[in-house]
Image (cartoon, rainbow, N blue to C red):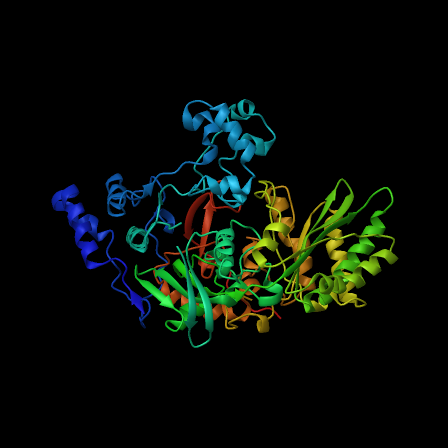
Length: 592
């Protein structure tokens, strides 16, 4: 099914605008927005493009001869109805090199709210991200470096770095198509809610929800709760369920009972690299399969998702913490942690979603449960599930007193159980590993080795953020999908490599075939192709080469990304540099 959202009348109107503005040269500017003659949904023999138009076989960069001219950018602004933005980092007000002076009042407000998630989202900023480390931290507030505004500005610079130089404020699919055509034709890097009560397809019949790109999780949770329904979404309220979350697999507070987010996608509307729109559920099945776990920004730009929703259910949740104190030694706490890890199979079998943090602060170890989330369980049922662990902890001399709450439905349970977390600190890098069930079978050598590896990381001053759940295939709504703990570290290159090749490598060795969760992964993950997608990767690469032979879409560690590299100007693994063809790509290889 091909839906050309840019209509013939709109094309004529755009051509008239260009003619009035550029006179006889209007056709040159119109060619910037022309559709590709290749229909990527049909069989074609177009060779994959690995020749880029910028210097050194890179995508054009600001200042290059191949970079769009001022007039060409104005043409893009014209055809998109004035939607082109030339953004600057929010923290630029703290640096005199970008403003001519430091606005200390505004800078103070930015600094105070920088790690407040809802404030960041309320700014409606098109370029800031909640994990600034991966952009390159080229313009962070002085507070992120433990310095006052004036002191840090002394000789310091705020640069655009890895932030995009231009952004289109897309509100329609037509704007999206024009922007994609412009990026493809110039060779540059391309960095609504409705209930369907009775949706029916070959694999599903029942209620479904359609949501546009950019809608946030808490908005969907609230909207559908009024219908007596609930949907899967991220634990973070501002994460969009229609973006990289669902396309990266998408674990959720409801995963213990209903599986992964990718299991619930019924259809995608996506603008592919040729500039047209494809709806893929019963059509273009290879693309539909790939989108359900590809990680996003690989095969096209998704404008909306239709996903399977569920009848609402009651929820019981609990929170608690335990750690070292004047009465509890570190050895006792570690015995308690081992007991908690031994509980994992029981929790998973009972459809529990447990989200917890373990921190080492100056040698003091603390586990915080936030929360223990039992969907479709009464208070009595949830307490019976947890009681054997509480009894074991008591035998160790650790008395844990959970704070229990009961809710009639998911939305109130979510609001009452999950705290709003801060934006990730600039000095933190994350990585993840999926631990199979056998790693937590008490009484085995593998369990002991797994526990020792985790506590060794804690002893080294790292933190562990974990989830206990079993989003099995049987619990998911649609099982043919393509998708297969976190720590802080000083962001120095050598330490960064040690993080990947040291503690994380030990976890890989303990979990052969376990893989990693794409949405919370190490951007330096070795053999990322196998870690994220396993043996499905070769098929995904074929889909990528079919639907994007132009190599328009790129995401770090995305499908096909091994053939490219960001040549960072600061030598860190971030986005602060040119995107170029990788002359020596490390290809996929299967692991035992």
